[in-house]
Image (cartoon, rainbow, N blue to C red; front, top):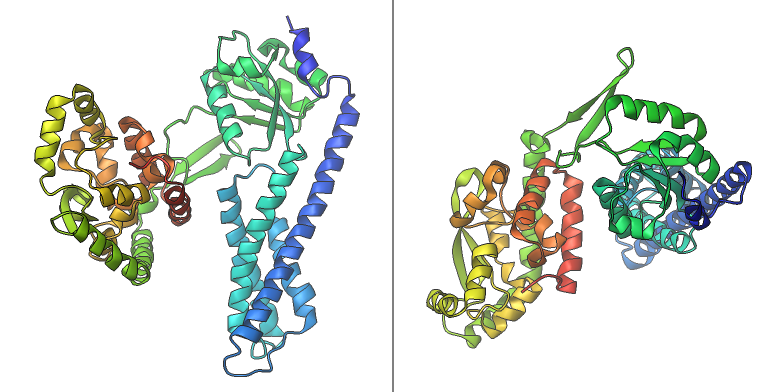
Length: 493
């Protein structure tokens, strides 16, 4: 029996289906128009920024630099708008980093189209190459900023949330809703749940049960939503098919969550077998391809060389402070396990006293709680071995700066699993083979996911997930998020 009280929480309970659909379409159309305008302004701003920099800041070989207005106001912006909206690159259901990746690709394609147009018009010699490079760089940056800002605004006024009913109220639905709440990009507004046997949970404290599986289509019609999300991976095949067939005539979209938790989905592709009415899910091992490993190595080597040059003054200052703070070497090399089980010296600024081993043994002998913490995490939150400057270095992660030299030597990567000691190998269990596939990283999923606030088993799973889902864009995301985490000093001690 339906819980009639639940419908009081549904926004559309007193609205006819036709009015709901009209409102949703009007709202979607209005937001789309605003999005096109924001994209146009972002690209136009990028063109003018590039124009000012190229013409005023770096005139280089000649002062008379100009760009025809038709390129500024029409050719370049329209080329970007074509690729941005041809594939319906909206802002409704994409998380920020997914949005940024697709914006990056669209920006590259748009600039290639502009260059082709310039070539056939014979204008390639008239317009500066530096100007075009700046246009591409600023367009990507301004588009990302503009869309992020627009999404925050329309989300705040509830203009992008799509009313959705979730079928299922178990652990899967709980994880799903938690993800929606943590990520602004989901675009789903949960108006109720459909479940046969609801169990006490945090989900039911926030969302009402509005029906059962047997009457799912009646509930959807009455509520008036056009989107359904099936979060019941335990359903038998026939039950799932029956549910989909009953719901499909009454909704625009049906999304269901298969039981693929833990499967490396970052590189998954879908193929359709029409005659057999079946789908194939193909999982690529990106790091098994030589060109990907070479590209990753070249990218990280270049970044490390630039990084060393940039931080060298800071490197020297920190070296002096460490030397003055306590006796001992400025940099020490700790033996860690690397790719293919090879041991290597992992460089770090010294953050502990020279007699750290003796201090540790004495502390663990006198403090049972610390001994338990050490056995569990191989770390101590209040470590007596750490020096005064060492606490600052650890809190800011500056103690890992010397690892740039490990990257140049080919022993580490900028991004990869957290480097471990030999004693930790057995704790990785079946996941250790994933660890051996790649070089350990200066930063990685663990560092941007919470660092020391994450327990050890979850650290292992994060490392494994990274290896199985690697992509160049994932590395870029982790590097950018690392900056945010370091500045916030989240989870570091």
